[in-house]
Image 1 (cartoon, each protein chain N blue to C red):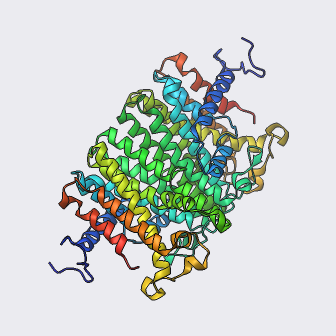
Image 2 (cartoon, rainbow over the protein chains, first blue to last red):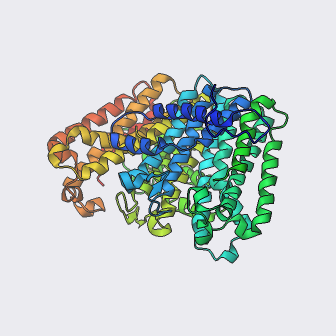
Length: 311
Length: 311
């Protein structure tokens, strides 16, 4: 097998994470493509498909599938939950991009949903995706997963969306923009990231573990792992913004500083931010001890990938 | 017991429907009041509570509870589903009222959600209520209802929201406003009402029947009953708009005609509209034959109430 270009050999394992990511993203994209019913009215299906199939690394579905495989399940058992999590993620992006929220014109190099389909369709496409996530997961998994486990998955997914999850994160993020920097502390920053980013990663990992038949202990370890890599992702993002050039990042460097955004380096300095990143990275990997080391490889590699990325 | 003022004695049964409605609405309001967690950020909880506790007749929860009681369940078993259905209803009202949709300033005599809390909060409050519906129903009912039945309830509720339900209805309704009247037929009108109104009434009745342990046949009869009263409600609404004065209605009479809105009288005339209403009323009541006639009284009365109301 010819290894794909740019394969990273800089960590212990010979496991080919990039190839694993590409393969899983292909399966997920095929499943997502089949998940949207081609019913009338077609306008709304088009709006839903436009954002759902716009690409992206599919990190959340990958995490869901890898967690399921870690506890002894397989890709097929995790797939409906993996798709559901991506639907929720897409729904939140569509609503966050609206003029009344972050007012974004571009997302993943394409026009945002409301720019193409109008604000009314974008609100409805987000709502439709929220509902489709619950419908898709419960319909596709009936027969594959015990009903008790399905119910737990529904509860976890719902919690990750609402006022204990994504919605809470977005509310505090919006209110922080209007805030005096002196009033914005580390606690607020962590609240935003734990809710806007970590909550859905947590749901992805926990849903995978539930679907795969994981024990309580396994589910809780994967929950903690996901929360750590969720925060890690944000700390690294903030560090890259102040240490890398625009060319290296492929996006405007220093834009967080320019925008006066709440970031780790701004609140605790660059050195301490790096220490926080190392601590989170260590804590994430610790959660994977005790699992079969071969099966844990994708998740070890995912934590490394997030910690060591350069853009 | 002193009967409440305005008690209607104009149908066969001595069953006191108005008192039944008031009692159920009180139980539902108390349950809804307890259903929103008082967590930070409080702004979003306030926005959610503002619309969820804004009153209204609570017809959907009442239908859910009455369907549950009809198949042998009780109010407590149905309550979490009844609340979930009202949360979905409220979520759709908040989003439908947004400036990019129906741009409404008032709802139930109060300012709409976005007028009080801002558009961003209104979008998020709607999203939070969608998620809360699934969380509340599954958490509260675990232990009361078999997991297999809970899963069915989740599927039914999700379908009623998305592109097979409320969202589809709103999409066609929005596109009809821009339509030449000659292109707008009875089929389109029924599509809108079946999706915007009947789908959630159907979910309310079906969820009640599922929670109460109803058989397949019972569930399907209640589904049909709810679809009939959903359409009936709209036909009667359209008839009242052209036959009653503003004073009698308590809202502007003739406003549908003025707005060039698609209505039954406009499409098929007043006489045939009345025939449609009678047919739907008959069909609804037929679904209740074969059930215990005492337990069916609230649903017989509900169909009568919708058919015979004067405002």
